[in-house]
Length: 83
Image (tube, rainbow, N blue to C red; front, side, top):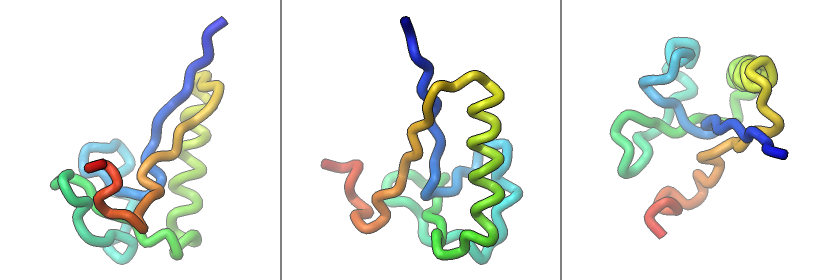
């Protein structure tokens, strides 16, 4: 049988996401190298990001996803996608 795994960015803000306006400027970091429409998130601000990410997980559940793939969590290596 098939499983559905849903992708979401847990470590970057993307200008084209429907929830992009929920991220205050104070949690938006530098531009994600190679992706001009993305910025790294200040993940130390769980008070702000927690509810946004929980809403994304709720959306995945509501859409019937069996699992999620939280991406862009490799901020320690800004060029990780280049390898």
